[in-house]
Every structure is written in structure tokens, then in C-alpha cells.
Length: 322
Image (cartoon, rainbow, N blue to C red):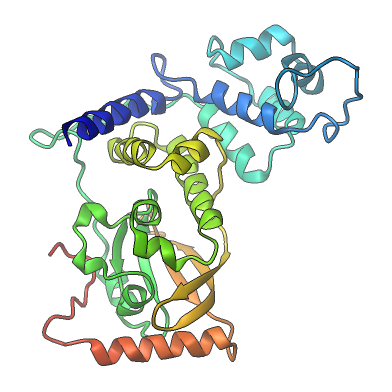
């Protein structure tokens, strides 16, 4: 137990150092991201002819990226080694074009190339444990007026801040979990029952990592995010591998299929809505195509959940600490 604890602490510390991307004395996320995207791009897809030379590494060579981006090889080397931190927008656009980055990847490149703000000061008496964001009363009320739609409020790092009965019936009894355990990414990797819900766990887990990596680029000094990455890196080899791949993805509409122990197979649309009054929060809703087998299964699940709810112990606000 002591060894495991020391490993987790060391990983969290290492991850914290790694996540200080963009700060003058921090890590080199920009260089790591460029290397990962360069290695992932097939030279033939980039339109480069076969020059007959043996390729010792996958993807583009540095000189090939320099050629495609119209910059010097030395400049690419300095970027990847973290020796150049101020990059103009035209150069970033050229690199993004050369690497054929998707829109989310391009946004991420622009984000991590910006000068990161200094780490926020810690509150006295609460080192490394920032408070959980508060969910507005009206938003909590909205959740409870959606009895036919599983819904919840998430933070940017996918902490579950509030939820309705439908979300608990579909995913897990969040009220039975400690507040620190109410995180969709943590549950996806470390909770066997939650993991078993996914028809395609690998795809869902990769999406989670990509979303978390995107958020890490926006908030590199978030101690809770760094601690989460450190813990999952120690405890799950798949997370460790996928995190190192530097795949990123922003919020988007998804379709997910679940194998639910009560309702059977459900294919649901995962709708994501921003919360204007709280930019760091988002409302997530799960819907099924009307008249489909999944719609019928979801209706059955919600009815089943309603019959099991005892008004005396139903935690209606689904977000207060037990």
C-alpha cells in the first residue's frame, strides 16, 4: 500500500510538472504535441514522394515538416525541444496545415502555444484542494424538471456536479459515491461496473482522454486535473498510453451504446450544452430516437427507477455532499 501511494504521489508530481506547459519554467507540451502529430502523419498522405531512404521513425521527418510548413529545420528542432516559445500565428497556421490537424487539434495547438498565465494562488488552509464548483439553484431545478431525460452538470474536467434521477439510473448511483469519486473519466477507467456499461469501452475511454487532454491545454495549472492524470497514469496502462498519444477533442454531439443490466442495450445521443452563467460547466443530456427500441428501453428504465425511489431518501438535488 505504501509503495502504491508513493507511486501515485510521484506520478501526480511528475504530471504536475509536465502540465505546466507554456510557463517559462514549465514543461514543453507544444514540442510534445508537434512530435506526436508529426509521428502520426503518413508521408504519403502528406504528398511526399518516397526518396528511398530508410525511415527509422514513423511519420514525417523533421526536415519534411519544415519543408511543408515553410520554416527552417532548425526552427522545428527548437520548437520540439522547447527552446522557442514565442510562435507567430502565421507559423502556427502553417504547422497546422502541414500536419493536417483537425479543427480540435488546431484549436489545441493555438491554446498551448499561448503564454500560460501564472498558477493561481492557493487558498490558505486548503493546499492543492480547490473547492468544487457550485451549481446554480435554477440549473438544479432544471435537472429535476427533466424526468424523461437523464441529465447532469459536469465541470470541464468531467466532475459530476449535479444530476437527476434518470442519470443515476442510467449510469451509477452518484449519491453513493464520495464527491472526489464523482468523475466520469475516473469511473470509466477504475470502476468495473461503470466500465461494463459501454458497448465499446475502448472508444469511449479514448474520447474521455482526448477531452481531458484538451482541457489540460486550457488549464495547465489545475491541481485537481493534474492529480487525476497522475492517478490514472499509475493505475491504468491504457490511460497512460492514450494520454501520451496527445489526441485531443472538444465538446461535440456523440452517439454511445450502453449494455445496461436492467434496460438492456440502449443507443443514445449525448447532447452537450454550455452554461452561459458558468463557462466552466456544461449540461449533458442523454436522448433516444423517438419510437426506437432504445427509446422504449430508456422509458422502461426511467419507470423502473421511479418505482424504486423513496421520497424520504431521494437526494433530489443530486449534487450536495452526503
